[in-house]
Amino acid sequence: MLLALALAGCGARDDRTEIVVQRFFGECGAVYGQSIDVAKAETECGILTTIINRFEAENPDVKVRLNVVAWPGYPQLAAQIAAGDPPDLVTMHQSVISDYAGGGLLEPVDGLLAQAGIAPAQMTDAARRGVTKSGRTYGLPIDTIGRLFHINTRLMRQAGLMQGDRPILPGSPDELLRQARQFRAATGKPYLLQGQVAAPDVNVGNLYTYLLAQDAVIFPDARHVRLATPEATRIVNLYKQLAAERLSPLDQDFSAAHNAFIGGQGGILATGTWMIGAYDEVARDPASKLHDSYTVLPYPRLWGRAAAFVDGHAWVVPKHERGAAEQAAIARFLKHMARYDFDWTRTGHLPAFRAILDRPDFKALPHRTDIAAMAATGQQLPGYVPRQSAIQGLIGEELEAAVSGQKPVDQALKDAERRVNELLGEML
Image (tube, rainbow, N blue to C red; front, side, top):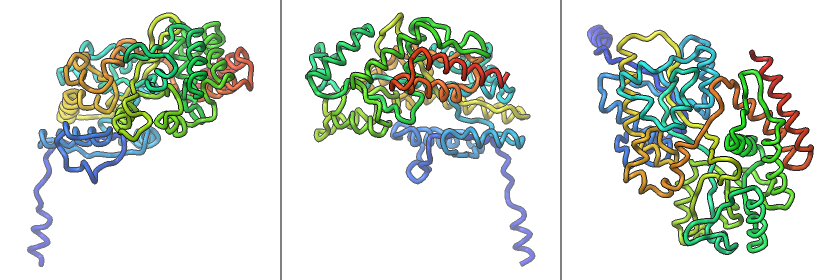
């Protein structure tokens, strides 16, 4: 017995370099826990799990300790940072990077990317802007995400709004209203579904998109927002008119809007890139009301130039003391993730790297050539803007009141501006 105990205490040491990788996107270990065939993986969770599994298989000298957190994972990350024990790599929305980088909680990754052989010039314009804050690169972008027009072409054809196989989208606010009225008269259904209930990001995304299209300066500095403007008033009045004429319902959350769209109860659903795969699958089902009747396009240009308010996901490195071996392992992980960026685009997101946009296999994916322009036109708020999610909530409350007619548009925009400026004033 003594001999057995002695031998049990002499187990082989694990001399591998360990890195802690923390991610959201769900848990699917039961299906993909052992998979390393990235090309056969499906869904965000499945693809990302398989990519990480393959990294471990190809890098046996690196031990990956994986933490899967509930979306979005930031409360857990904040606690880990406060305890002085942050992960080595974390998935983070690009719009959130400013908060952590501005607080000195993230490592710039310029050196790590150089070590991995990744140059910012290889990234798409939208992806590079998303991870660049104050002239430094604070993460490896893996995609660009944004809102699109998901379109029922059968209903659009019924309304006389198709030219061949392409939907006819408006080129001005007046034209949008004319087409929406024409659609409603021909089909008896709403033109634009948006899922606005309990979703402040919907109205705020519309506002930001068309302010950017008009080259409006939304945040002139880190302490102020500019919303009480003619540009913003025009945008909010348009959406208020759509609601007033029942051309766009106000009483649907995303689930209701989604079900209405796949049930053939609306012409266009404004929602994200991440729904392309799901709707394309529904459209292949002969029993579906969307069968052979689905396409997707960026938001139409109504003012100014083509623009899209976007976000994205990135791998970031929390600030912590690390040795050369850990740094090298992190660089290898980043290189590996960039290598599989095409596979990640199968989720519906746009790629983070320019070269993928020109690949035949990317162009062969459903509808990708229709939305590829967003990789160039996509813009985010300036990197110095903190607490973007909290700001979105404040503006969203006021826009909901304005669009529903509960508050005059001018007053709602003034109140939104005041509330955001008060928040920023308290923080800085």
